[in-house]
Length: 219
Image (cartoon, rainbow, N blue to C red; front, side):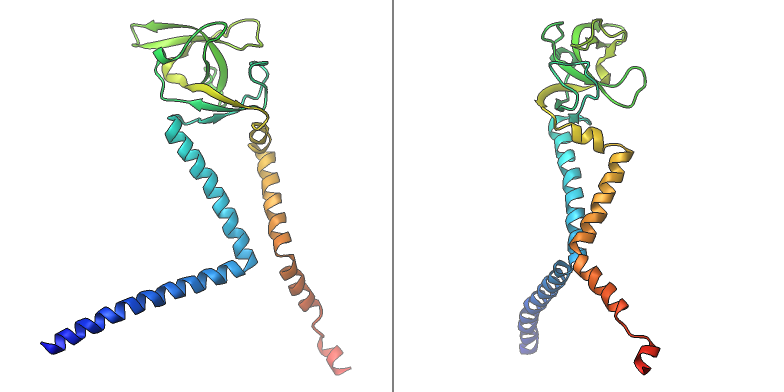
């Protein structure tokens, strides 16, 4: 009986020690990684990329749309919206939730009826309920365009309506969201890694260049 009790007491004392040792080893490894400038830079870049994806995912859930942020690439909605403005989109709307009027109708973001990959941002100027399909359809128009659009927009093609306009911030998305932008970001990341670890790179290059060869040693 006493033997079992002593073993139980020993296990209770040993487990916290093992937990402390494991924690200390984890902290030691974390300090090693953070002291290595190359690993630290890579870790910070990974955290930055993850933060962007997490932020976009949170906006998608809160605003109830797969396009919580959008940027018009034309001047069709000027002067209400300029090219390069960043738009915050509220989704999860039904047809009756969207106001349609030529002067002050809601500005909606919808799938391009022509099959393009970039969503269109135009004002809803007219809507009607289609009994046969059981959904609303809309006529749209750009504020800077003389005539209304030739297509109709069905309710299920609408990503949402504009609830906030942030001037100029969308230019980042326009210029960095293509192949040229990806190349620029890649070059900047490489430049950041080199600049952050230049002393280490310079030291290694210097040590290689400073090693004497056999002829120098014998002379």
